[in-house]
Image (tube, rainbow, N blue to C red; front, side, top):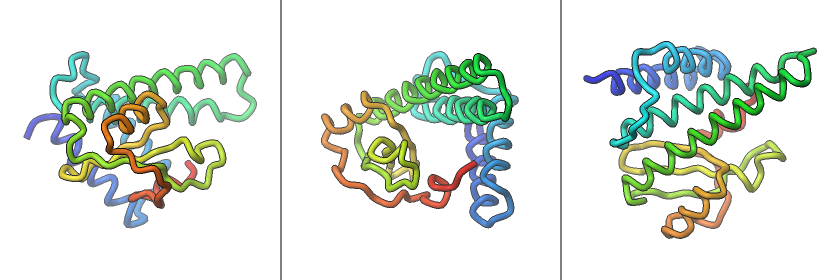
Length: 173
């Protein structure tokens, strides 16, 4: 088992603990953040495999969420708050780049995507779920470029559905 596979196995154990209620969403996010940032792999400059692209997705998603969380600290200076939000947006853009790389490597085969029913007014009609069915992989994005590519490839279903991981998606952290 290589380092990426070990990470995904560890991540699955975190997901299982979260699903059983043994940890909160915030605890899950923190442990996942620590695993990707302090682990001995990635991010990969050259995403030459789907596995590397999916790791980069997780890596940048963890950094984006961490920076966004820090930006919500009470009484934080406006400039500092803005810096954290800019970092968060930058990491989300890197995550989207990894997503598109993985989808292109798969040639969009076995992919289904649709908008997700969300409680957040900000994300309504923006957040979509990408399911790579054979691999049982669920990705999320709000990227207009990815949405356009999914539509172009004929794998985006123009409907809103309950997320396959609805409890996680609609739970604040």
